[in-house]
Amino acid sequence: MDSYDPRLPLVAWDRISDFVRQVTTEITGQVPYTDSAVLNAVAYHVDWCVNLAGFTLDRDDIFCREVIGAAVAAMPTAHSSSKGRRRSILFRVGETLGAIPVPPPLPPLAAAAATAPYSASEVDQLRLWAATQGSRDEPSARALVALGLGAGLATRDIGRVSANNITDHGALVQITGPEARFVPVSDPWGDELADLAAQAEIPNAPLFRPGVAWSKNVITVFVARSARTGMRPSTQRMRATWLVQHLMVGTPMQDLLSAAGLTSMDALVRYEKFLPPAAPPARTNT
Image (tube, rainbow, N blue to C red):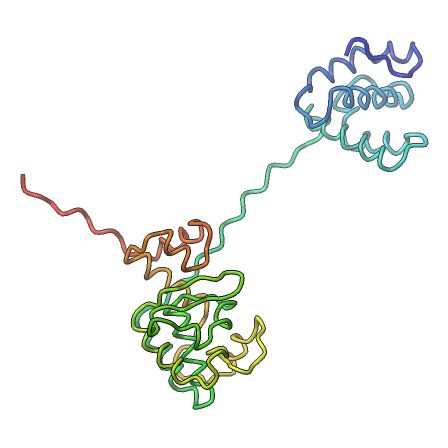
């Protein structure tokens, strides 16, 4: 650093060299630029401020945002990329020296709130909704509720399930595609799925809305247009119900993650608040 010799008139450099070296030494290692890049940017910036613009050697004045902006704009015959780099270096210098206020970091974003599971009485309402949709829509309504509550399937998976994917008399659902897996079906929904599979006219067509082109809004539209008897289902709440039930009975985490198509337990931690409190340990007589 002592050997640095910018292309400045000797008198001009002598006037600012000690100040430049002091500033550069003070911030060494605190900015994401090489020492030589910082030293060069600071030297020419201070030269402009003191020897051309008439500022005193006051770091708060020289390294404030407005002065840096004016100095960079006045750089002769420099490309915009060179000006941008010079300004970035000087802004980091100003922030490190305290001449440019640094806003406090934003607080971390809160994790998405977990969707509440259905209560037992609400599940009964979903059964009622499915059973009262009329002969044309009832099979799809039953399939939607059974796949949601029995297998915890997300919207994207429900459209992939055909009668051929219901195996082991309804005890397992095979999911095909990029998240292929087998999902165990919770009681009492296995019998419902086995019955729907047996009644399906086209074994390889989706149980839910066979013959309808699939899109992410198919379920939303179907539910919105359905008869209003009972409680209308939400795939998110049905999936939450299935997950919480497995957590309550102590399904091994790796098995649950695999069945749910999840890769991290972080997705399950959100549902802990819906679990009943642990029973206190039994007291023993001593």
